[in-house]
Structures are given as structure tokens and as C-alpha cells.
Image (tube, rainbow, N blue to C red; front, top):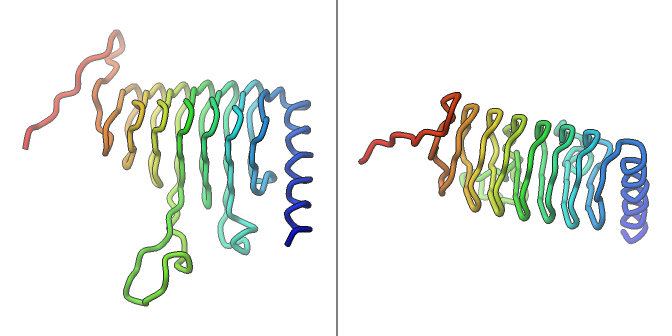
Length: 193
């Protein structure tokens, strides 16, 4: 097992150097990349210290077609975690604050078979984040979420569903707080229960 870990570290180190020198990607200090061959980072992007990118294809016997794709000039501030067993895509010119968690996978939770959660098949739903989005500190984006272009996610928000272009969302679960009408931000109307 130790030999495999050393091999993985060597592969990760090589991949970091290749990205840093050939793609114009800055940062990548103390970054963990599991299955780096399934991770693409666009030119001019910056990956902060302590980020973790994990794809689960080979690890799960190629059962999933995992990939992580980050667009051009996108900034991840640091300590961000991206987990993928499907397609996890972040657009161009995005700003991802510190300690953000984004995942497109979850363990199955069928109790009928008396199988522990770790041994249940993964539930996978792609996560797609549009261009020019700003994700606030400690936000959580869960499987199946699609964020349109120009969205802002408030700090600490838990995003469980999709949202269209040009909106500010916040809360747990996240809801639309404001929408861009083409000239200015307007408050969203919420029905009271």
C-alpha cells in the first residue's frame, strides 16, 4: 500500500508541474488531485492552497465516468473540495471563496437490503456552474445543481436545487434573494406559508 501511495504522490507532483508550466495555472501548492487525468483546469486559473479535487473512476473500478472541469480565469481561493463521480463543471471567470464544498455524488441510502452506506452504489447527478459566478465562503453545492451564468451564492449557503442566470441565492436550503433585471438587482418575492 505504501508503494501505491508514493506512486500516486509522484503522479500528482508531475501533474502539478505540467499544469503550472504549460497552462498558465497559478497556485497548486499543497493541492490534492485524485485521478488527475480526469481533471482539466483552464488557462489563467488560480488554485489556492489546500484544495482537494477527487474523481472516482479508477478508484471505483471505472464504474463511473468522473471528470472535473474548471474554465479559464477561474479562482479557487483555498481549502475547497470538489468530489466527482460524474461531470462537475465550473465555468470561466468564476470566483470560489475558501472552504467551499461541491459534489455530484452521494452514497446510496436504501435500508431494505441491510447494506451499510459505504457499500451501497453511489448516486450521481452532474453539477454545472455557469460563467462569472461567485460562490461565497463555506457554501455547499450538492448533486444535481445547475447554476446559470452570473449567479452569486451567499456564504454558508446549502444549494440543493438549480437556479437560473443572474440571481443571488442564500440560506439553507438556498433560495433566490435577488434577481438581475438587466439594469439592477431586485428583491425576489417569496410566498409566505
